[in-house]
Amino acid sequence: MSDSRGQQTSDQPPQDDRGRPAGQPPERRGGLLMGRPFGVPIYVTPSWFVIAALITWVFGGQLNDVLPDLGGARYLVAFSFAVAFYASVLVHELAHTLVALRYRLGVRRIQLQFFGGVSEIENEATTPWREFWLAFVGPLLSLVLGGVFYLATRFVELSSVPGVLLAGLMVSNLVVAAFNLLPGLPLDGGRMLRAVVWAVTGKPMTGTVAASWVGRALAIAVLIGLPLVSAARGVERTTTDTLVDAVLAAVLAAIIWNGATGSVRNARLKEALPGLRLRELARRAVEVTSDTPLGEAMRRAREARAGAVVVVDGRGEPIAIVRESAVRAVPEHRRPWVAVGALSRDLEPGLRLDADLSGEDLLRAVQATPAGEYLVVEADGRVYGVAALSDIEQRLTAAVSGR
Image (cartoon, rainbow, N blue to C red; front, side):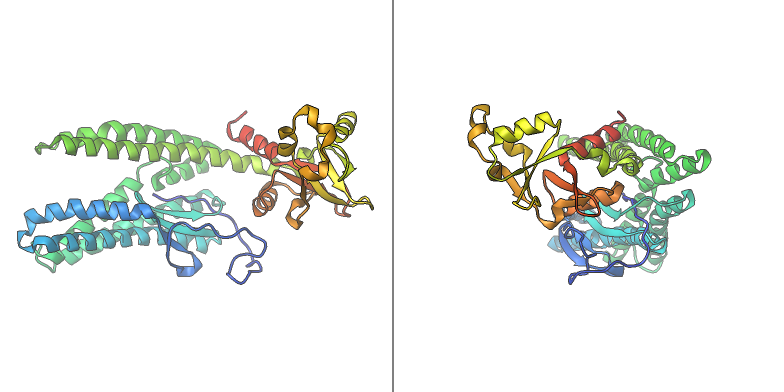
């Protein structure tokens, strides 16, 4: 499965000594770093080792029927298959990455995890055709790999170790391609369906909603259908086999359902971002000195109909913001005896935000310096107000939920 979210980029921004864009938050790690092809970090998550062990156990047991002379070495062969299979998954994800880079879309990282791989692309494609090709190229490469492994099996004995490995890789890549071509989000086929509906209607959100509902239907089909298909194969099965099939079906269905729901949520968030303006979110603030009692500061705020308190020095320059969470923690009867300076956070550089910030620029600024409140200033340095993180989150939550 692939997550094809992307961001349009232009010239390369200034970078720090670790290769990150200057002023950006540190890169999120996603497991064990395996390399940086094309400048994109590849991580193997701890869950990969779980699935590698499961593949080794299951495939190793099957090898005992096909190649009984291997003995205990069959588990080494099975582990080699697990590694080779996930190398194929990596090729699938690198295909998405190369197309994203071709379209100048920023790629954060690639993760190899329990149920395959994820390419984290920073923004949506700008046209339906680009969206379609970005999604289709992954399954296409898996189909090509399946064909290559099929051709390779023609030159080896199928009952040998190379023959068994090549046949397994052929089948697994074809299964990966077929599964990802299913027309529901968050699968690649769902993104292809989204692109088609987008092209027909001219509305990317309509495409996202349509592909999301198909994805939810697929989740239900997997939950019910996968155990039924396994039971209908006519092979004698134990209670453990039936339980494993049911658990895998439930986990896979949950991943598809949550991915489909998350795709709609992310699309609504992106639609709402341009309307997220700091000037509209900022609260009016009153200015007091650090030795002002909290009770007095609150009285002034009520009279001015302000929702925040800013601490200033003797020259009237803002030096701190009174934390709303700290104010709530002080009982009413104690407020006349507690100075606001004890409840304030000093103004670090990242806590001063330009009043004209909006959209993704605003989110990046907030993410760079996490805090409960931010001082909002005009271009000339004058205080415009205070922005509370809770107000920003509430606006985004309302947009995502469609309220």
